[in-house]
Each structure stands twice: as C-alpha cells, then as structure tokens.
Figure 1 (tube, rainbow, N blue to C red):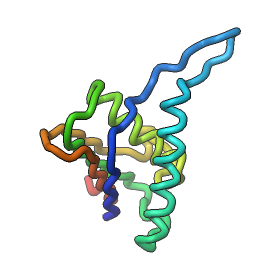
Figure 2 (figure 1 turned 135 degrees about the horizontal axis):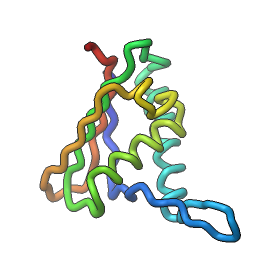
Figure 3 (figure 1 turned 90 degrees about the vertical axis):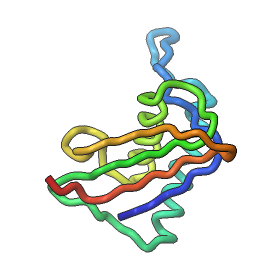
Length: 121
C-alpha cells in the first residue's frame, strides 16, 4: 500500500475551456496539478516504491479533511489527474482504477489522505 498526505486545499478538476478552437485548463488548476504531481513523484521515491500495480488494477481511497470547496467527484478527479501526471498510476481508466472511494470529513486542518493498494477482486 502507498499512502500520501497532501496538505492544503485541492483545486477541483476543471472543465476545459475553449478559445480559438483550442481547449485548455485554467492556470490555477494546471499549477496545482503540476505541483501535486511533483509531490507524488518525490514521495513515491522517498517511500521506495516503483510500480506496485498488476493486471488486477488499483484500489484508490481518498479522504478529504477540512473545508475543501467544490464537488466530491471533481476533487477526486483532480487527485487522479495528478497521480496519472506523476506516473504513480499509468492511467485512471477502468483498466487500472478498479475501485475508487472518496469521502469528505470535517476538520480544522485542511489536508487529503490518498491510499493506493493493489485491487483484489
């Protein structure tokens, strides 16, 4: 199992904006996603992990603690995007992410716990 603790507010997954027939994501979301992906890469290395998944896929559990803003599905989507961008998981399709749970709990401190483990049917 891999455990991450991401401090601070999560920027919810944004819908792409279209300008002159080109889609782009808002700058604040891109910046958050890039910083989070870098954190995941460093933390994965610190914990001594390489690819831990297999053909059975991955079980992803996310706990948002504190006064996060946005919808739960968009918050979880942002975490998945950062995990994919970091290379921690190869893809967030059903081929890889077999189980996904997300929960929001009240709290004074703003952080997110992410737990990844091999999926066992």
